Amino acid sequence: MLDPQLLEILVCPKCKGELEYRPQENELVCLHCRLRYEVRDDIPIMLVDEAKPL
Amino acid sequence: MDNRAIREIYEGLASAYDWAEGIPEALVIRRLRRRVFAAARGRILEVAAGTGRNFEILPADASVVAVDLTEAMLRRARPKARRRGLQVSFAVMEAEALGFRDGTFDTVISSLSTCTFVDPVAALREMARVCRPGGRILLLEHGRSNRRWLGRLQDRFAETHYRAVACRWNREPDALVRAAGLELVAHTRHLLGVFHVMEARPAAA
Image (cartoon, rainbow over all chains, first blue to last red; front, side, top):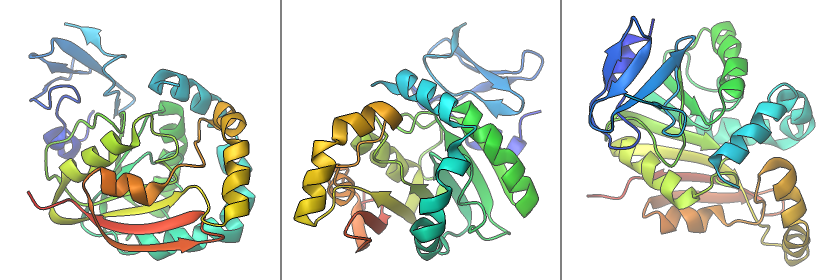
């Protein structure tokens, strides 16, 4: 489970826009950049070159 | 080297990092860490937190977010936060592209990092962006000595050192802080002019 306080301050590292947290997939989604950032073991991997396409 | 190459180097270094850094740490760096980071307050962001060597200095009641380029380094940091009883959240990020809202943090700290950032000016600008107006950016950095003989020696071996640990030891950290448009409010040099203790503020908008 991603820390809610952390979730509140996170934005997309690329466009600095809002992220959508999908707990079932355990990922953070940027709808604008169409990227999915994985959360591994409670650590969000906010790297554009590691993100998967939406 | 790009961020991917640096990440590969630090994935390899993670398990031995604390051991290899033990001697310089005990001799000088710990004292300087205390000097600069004891002033950290409130909601704190540590950029390039590595294995969490600064956690023991941060106030126990602080709320800390620690980011690093390398997941393996943060995995070493997590148990240190737990032992200290410090509230830390972790995220993997490039310093040049932080994923936080503008003005989120009261204090942004980073140590021994501008030498390794692919684009240190961009990284410092990002630190200023996520720091609230009037907040503080506290830095402990190392760079090219202002003693002529040592600076020349660093220049001569700069490429060898860079290829080994992705660290450019002949950069000028205070010049980088100014180039990024931060307001440098306090600056002292230590140990043959190699180490820099700096307090900066995000420039007024």
